[in-house]
View 1 (cartoon, rainbow, N blue to C red):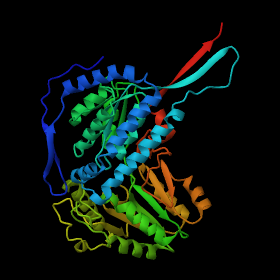
View 2 (cartoon, rainbow, N blue to C red; view 1 turned 90 degrees about the horizontal axis):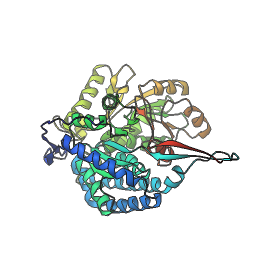
View 3 (cartoon, helix red, strand yellow; view 1 turned 60 degrees about the vertical axis):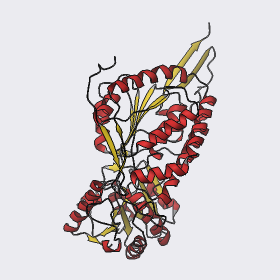
View 4 (cartoon, rainbow, N blue to C red; view 1 turned 45 degrees about the horizontal axis):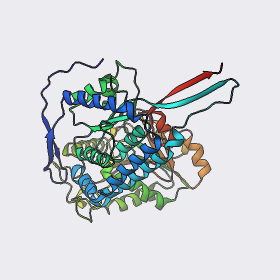
Length: 470
C-alpha cells in the first residue's frame, strides 16, 4: 500500500553559486502530491517500458546522449556556475559521461542476456535478468553528471523507470536529463525528476512503489536511506565516499607519481569521493617526493573559475571550506606542519569558499586529517619504511573506496593489491572510473555496484524459468 498523503507546506530552495555567492537559481520544492503523481506515472509506464525490445531502448538512450552532448558548451558553463569547478575542466565531465553511457549501452545485450545452464533432456531451463521496477536515484553535486549517469543509463536499459532527485546545488543537471529524454522521445513516465526536501526524499524512498534506491553521498546520508527503506525488502546501492590513500614505493617513478598524485589530490578542489586525501611514501623517496609535490602545488592558480587561466576553483560552499580550514588548524595544533604559504594564493580568504591547496607533513593517524574525509584541497603525507607498514596504514580506515600503489614492479604491486581493503586498487594511476570495471566500495564507503556488466545485476533481479516437456 502507498502511504497516505499528508498536506505538508513546502518552501522553495536557492542555489548559491560559489563563484560569487550570488543566487544562481531558485524554485519551489515538489510536494507529496507531486511524488504520488510521479510514482503513479512511473508504475504505469514501467509495465510497457519493460516490454520494449532492448535495441529500441538502446536507440532511445543513444539519442538522449547525443542531445546532451549537443549542449556541451552550455552545460559546462552551468556546472561551473552551480558548483565552482573551473570552466576549463567542466567540459571533461561530459566526455566522461559519454564514455560511460556509450559503454553501458554497448554491453547491455551481453549483460542482460539470458543465462542458460547445461542442456537437460526433457527440460527447458533459463534465467532472465528482469527489471526491479521503479528506481529512485539521489545524485550529488560534486560530479553531477558522472555520478548520476552511473545509475540512470543502466536502470533504463534494464527496463526500469527512474525518478531522479538531484542535489539542490546542481538542479539544472536534472533539467538537462529531462530535456534530453524528451528530445529522444522517451515514453512519458519512464524518466522523471523531482526537487525535494530531505524529509520528502525519505518519503519518496519509503513509498511502496519504489523498488530500488541508488544513492551517492555521505555516510550519514547512507544511514538515512537505510532507515527510510527499513520497512521494505528492497535493495539500495550506496556510494558513500572515502579517505583514499596512495602508497609510493621505493621503486616508483618519482616525477610521474608526483604529477599524478597532485592532480589526484586537488582536482575539483579535492571534492571527489575517490580523490587522494592521504599519501604514504617510502623513506628512500620521501624528501624528494615532498619537495616535488610542494613545488607543483604552488603552481596552481586559484581564482574565478570562469577565467581560462584558473585551474583551482572555489569549494562548493563557504561552510565546506571552513570545515577544511578547521581540520587544517586542528592538525597544526597537534603537531602537523604546513608546507604551503597561503599568501601565495591571494584569492584564498576566510569567509569565502576560495581555499588554497595545502600539504601537511608530520601527520599521523591520531589526527582526523588522516582518518576522516575532508573533501577539500588538503593532503597529508607520511613517511613509511616498508610495504607492510604502508598496507597497514592504508587499511587503518573506516573507508574503502579506492587506493593507489605507485611502483615499477607490477608483480610486486599486484601482490600488494590483494591485501588492500578497497573496492578498486590502482597501480600507477588514481581518481578515475573505468566503465568496464565495477565501481564499488567496502566498509563505510558503502555497498552495491555501478558500471560494468555487474552494475546491471544491481538494477535487475534473476527470474528462473523451469519447463518440463510432457
